[in-house]
Amino acid sequence: MNILAILGASGHGRVVADAARLSEQWAEIIFYDDAFPHLQVSGGIPVVGNSSALLQRHDCDVVVAIGNNTIRLNRLMELRDAGLSLAVVKHPASVVAGDVVLGAGTVVLANAVINTLAKIGMGCIINTSSVVEHDCELGDGVHIAPAASLAGEVIIEQRCWIGIGAVVKQAIRLEHDIIVGAGAVVIKSAAANQTLVGVPAYSLSGKAKG
Ligand SMILES: CC(=O)SCCNC(=O)CCNC(=O)[C@H](O)C(C)(C)COP(=O)(O)OP(=O)(O)OC[C@H]1O[C@@H](n2cnc3c(N)ncnc32)[C@H](O)[C@@H]1OP(=O)(O)O
Image (cartoon, rainbow, N blue to C red; front, side, top):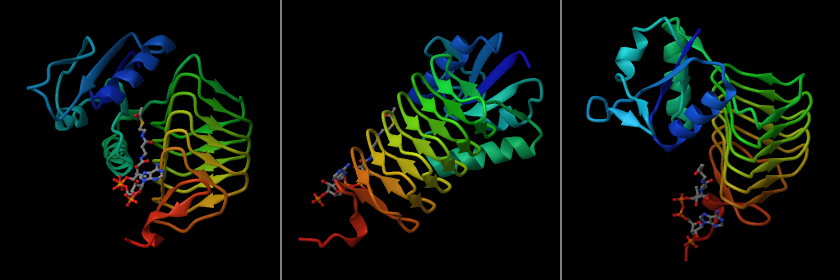
């Protein structure tokens, strides 16, 4: 389709819009945001309605640019179930191996590299200058923040957030809904629903309170 509708007109939305514009895949880019009608324009791009209005459209591709993994994924599924066509946005300065599978609604931003046989789920953010090495598997709604790096054969389950500049050693598995803090170095697999920080990474929930 000729129009890309982006749900979420915040800073991340503007980054996604710019990647989409540079990819030259769409003739027109518009925002939807629940701050409409208060918010009318973002980064020079018109905000034309709220999320309910977007659900009524069927003449455009759509992507959700909301940082929160659970909200982004839920919104995407809602739009998919309403029959909208979910786009993949890939910045032209990203490098994605030819055999990589990118799930619907995923965005790959500038200078990100995804290497051979990686599988990326639905609604993921592969953010600026991040690295997803060969044979990694990312579940739905994962966010790899700027400059974070996953070594080969890492498995990241759904809705994990790998913080800015974090590093994950090869063949590690992170179960669902883990947050890895900025700059952490993860060297062991970890169970779901915890926050890991530090070098080497440890669980914040297991930290003694002083
Ligand atoms: C384009 C973009 O901007 S994408 C977004 C990129 N941003 C990121 O990736 C941010 C990642 N987020 C973080 O690193 C956060 O600090 C989190 C999620 C790890 C923790 O946040 P919160 O749950 O709010 O924890 P809080 O800030 O209260 O810190 C709790 C403790 O952990 C420590 N801590 C927090 N983050 C880190 C970190 N990254 N590394 C080491 N220690 C940390 C704090 O110093 C604090 O320790 P204390 O109890 O001894 O004082």
